[in-house]
Length: 459
Image (tube, rainbow, N blue to C red):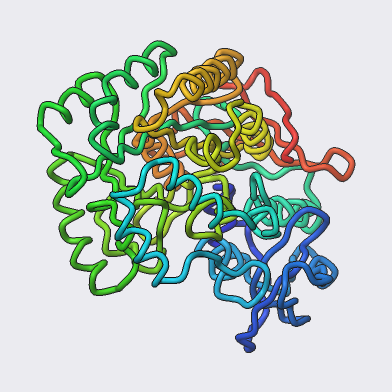
């Protein structure tokens, strides 16, 4: 059984049995895995490429089917973790993490409070000017982890010699994909605009979350938090003081994590997001939250490059990661200088094709400039249209966390000639079947009555 494959599909364990190699070498590299998937890690049969732009060996060629057993040259759980934890970023290839040096970063945050927005935009555009040269993760959406699991599902169908493999569908009520709206409140001007932003969201029937900085930036009155909660919106903790140094030193992080955790309890917050999406996933165990939202799928336009290469939630120990999968409003407007939802629509379409989660970061500090607000309203209208067509589930982060945790504990059991879901929340779950249509992986999702089903492409 391979835990990462099971966690993703929630299929019966008998369909997730792989024969894995003894991996003695510690040398990691980049590999192709079929025509669409790419990974970084160890492979028993070949050494990987040092650079993602090199000619990559296709590890699919080293897969063997013996009887009904699938023999792999790598460990899928290790490969998924290498991507999700951004371990490829420590390599010396084109997938390495890029960003400002610690000295430049410290200098920037020291003078940032005194810089006008126009100066900050100019400096950030200079810093990010090479973003189009980054070849991995793949802009504008990277679903490498999901692509690996899909390729493994194709191989399992062949190895088991079955027409279909059952699994628990990704989202409740058989919905094809998910969308999540979040608002990072960076300064007092943003705090003072939160009520107005709730009015905008409510106008489209969308509830969102507000990530609040607990120290240093602005006062956080109880009445402010009560207003957000009373209107059905959600509160999460946004860093400690948004100074950009949370992950600069382990000891500093541990001290700050204690205070952050206290604010989480005080605010009644289940989730956390760091400032500027700075992160070190190996330290996240010190955070006492149900979920985190600090890891981009593709970090090409972020101060800390890299990305988890995943568009679905995944666990980091006990904490669930809800990755940031679309471009932030600030980057769209001020780095790319686009006031259009075309990129957001493209990202949402690519994410939906893989049945992932389109998560958005919109700042009340910047969104009320007229062009920005018009663009945001157009995005909300687009999401509402998708929802009305049954193409997407729009949920608050807390709701996504609850669903994904419940799904992670569900299992499929045999009942006569069919399958049944067991576990808390099963009434919202749907059974799906992975099968082949030619050489294309397709999913068929059962309706609640079992009298009908719908078929969708896996990719």
